[in-house]
Amino acid sequence: MPVGGLKVAIAGGSIAGCAAAAALIRAGCDVEVFERSASGLMDRGSGIGIPGTLREELIENAYLPESYPNCEMSRRWWQFPDGTKDGRLLCAQPTPAYANNWGNLWSALRGLVPDDRYQEGKRLASFEESKDAVDVRFADGEERRFDLLVGAEGYKSLVRSVLHPNASPRHAGYVLWRGNYPESEVPDHHFIDALDAETAWVTVPFPGGHGVLYMIPDFDGGNTPGRRRVNWAIYGPIPNGQPWDGIESIPPGNVTADAYCELQELLRDHFPPAVRDLIAHSQREDVSIQPIYDSIVDSFVGERTLLIGDAATMTRPHTASGATKALEDALALERLAKSCTSLPELLREYDALRCEGAKVLAEIGRRIGHAQVTNTPDWGTMGPPEFATWTKAILAGDKLYLYGEEA
Image 1: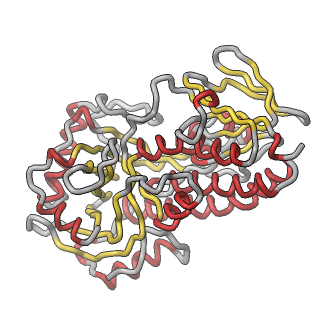
Image 2: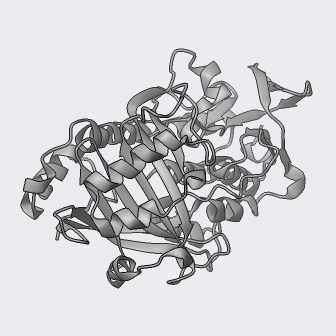
Image 3: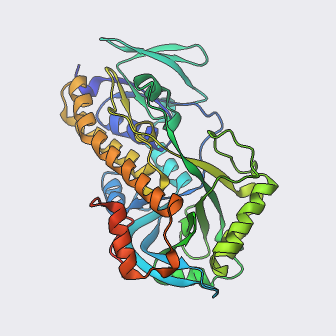
């Protein structure tokens, strides 16, 4: 069967699922997206970064509109607490990237999928591949037959668990605190103004972890000073004051008072006051805690199945490549779906093109986690030359857009 005539089910309607749907619709496939959440996804407002080159490609290929809102991130400040209000600049790294609001990015991609092709509250329960089709069963009991099933359900992907039953996500042993709020609430703008002057963002290193802070567009697309959101994230130990099963994230509203106090103590002990105050402004009910995982599989495809995004390979957020990888997967999928003449050829070419690179990216994330969380150096003794040596050792010859040459 020509690839353009395939009847495709996509399990998962997040960024990866919507991007995959757009790619395959453009290739002439009959696509339906099934999202397990029944409450919508727009309120997920965390910040995510994408490389500038990918942003341009997405706009050029009409995955994003010309007016799509970003906040430029051209320079990364490593800011060390030295007793002064702002801290000491250890080094600055070029970072040709753009910060996004997760909700805005998802909304733009969701707009590429016709409403009658997107079902909410529809969870994949099981599937069975055969030579002629893939039979899909949903949690509500409905059974459907498709030519191809795309697993885009994130790191807990059912599709991946069936294709690779022995490959489970590996917990890194630490967590990521997250929060964001409207910039209009900031009482002292001097540090944000300094960042804006160089389109910079900041990383604060401390023993056993580090934190980042940068600006993202607001939900209404506002991306000019005063109309954005202050977005932050901190990698560190698992908080003692938070009941946790070791698997699920702690969503906003569920962080305990004891755990929130641990966050405030970390900020007080290890962050320059200017950055500390910007992060500490987040109220407990607006803070979340994300366990850090990574996962690698040896193949992204089955006989009539295909994995995309975090369902394929999950990298640690240090690489800022979760959405990047999913979008690059989708762009590759569109090109291949338009050039391949059969489903077996499409699956073979997609696997060869995307799997090995994802493994490299996951390994980079592990090295960064080791160097910047579980085996941190004596940050205060480092300057630009030491940072250059340290960064090269982490990357070990690989490239990552967030790590340019220090200046």
